[in-house]
Length: 531
Image (cartoon, rainbow, N blue to C red; front, side):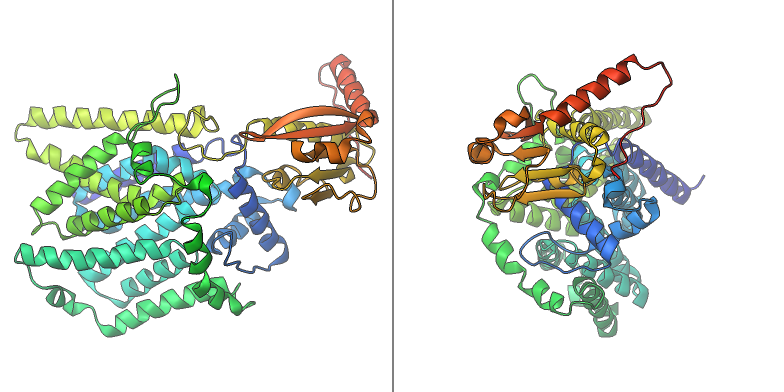
């Protein structure tokens, strides 16, 4: 098998490994608030065919449009039939496909470095965990790597096709999340910084290197970026104001960058999260192995600057992007994926360079074994993050997450609907100023009302099920509490919910459970149809 075949086989193997981290048990973890909101948006597009970009919230249209395809293929007949996996499959597949995109950079990274980078992308806890999240970040870094890979090929080989693909990926970045501006700005600044390094290494000027990049292809690339972004922001031309809203979107997000105190963190928040985290007696979560190898890769790229133009560019880009996100006070863990991706590419260079630097075959094997052990430890951390501690506060990637109690509440609502004479038309009243992700778990019920305060004028009739936050409990339930049985659930950490079930419905549920317990094995109880 020649070198090219080994390269392809290695990357394909890494892709298969990435699927093992991203696809299993996608239904298990409770829906995060952001996931639930995005699921409602995507399901609405799927069912109505309409999309309207909101520049103040919710990010761009690529996630709902891609999910529309997944839902169409799922066999679900409506929102109530959909499951978590039907949504999470979209970022999961994008995260796995990202491993394949590394092949676009193979001649710049080197074959061994490409395989190492692919494997590290596959097992990285941060990359794999957030590939299982129905949010925009994984799509953003997928399209970013696509733009980098296509741009590199355009620079190396020329050609209209690579120019068009680069522009298309940039357009998709723009239509995914507003922070695309940070990544593209760092790419541009990296090219400027590399121009200075070229003078340091007495290399040809950027003007000579870019001489084969025609203005015609630059125009084609820019045109593709604008066209793709405009089509998506306008809801496939159904809302032309979407283009203006996309341009104005920087205003609310700029103001938010120093806003919500719950998400204001020190400059080193991301680096500490990656380097070492242990909560109480829980397991250690660390991707320090990637950081260390990335440091080696950056040092090698600068030391061998004349022979490693892509390594120089990646070093500049990753340092700039890391600094940019460190400087922004508003921080959420998934935002680190952009510079983590750059670190992993540099780590691939570092791993290959370590083995190459050792002259003796025995030493190379020993170094390879140590690197393999480090990679296996990364895989263990990734497995803990994705599966063993997927919704645990011991896991640093679990951030502002729904409590596992929500799954128990979901099960209780199913039990109540099964014995209610109204079935899925059972009336539910929710009183909370922030009920998410509860609407996701109430999606199978057809008559649910939401109120942000205790204004009972809107609730004209007593509901069999009332869900209320403790702040509104006295105002909502004080005059009718004796008619209900009360349960207590956690919606999110430090956000409790009180659930009131009318006594007749509660008694029917208990009777159904007693009947089920005394039924012969194999007998199935027929639930209420709700008709």
